[in-house]
Image (cartoon, rainbow, N blue to C red):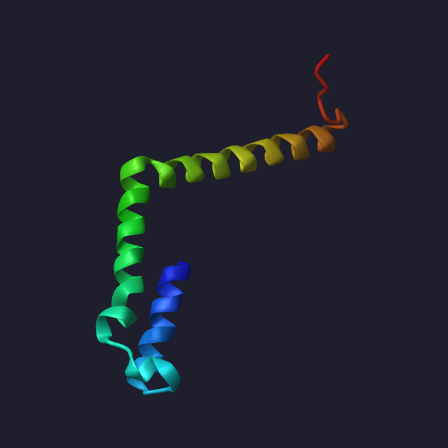
Length: 80
């Protein structure tokens, strides 16, 4: 998302001819969009996206279990 945000800002600066960016070539201004596409392709190909989604679901599951245990008065289960 950072690359996409940077690309949008650079695109606006180039289009409105603001500052130093006005003199840059278009390929430099559009490069963050290409890098964002490459990042998303790699993240999907390598399983990074799926791994992060699973970690998020596991964290939510553990928080829900802990909350329910506390509500039942059992507290946090401790391992010996």
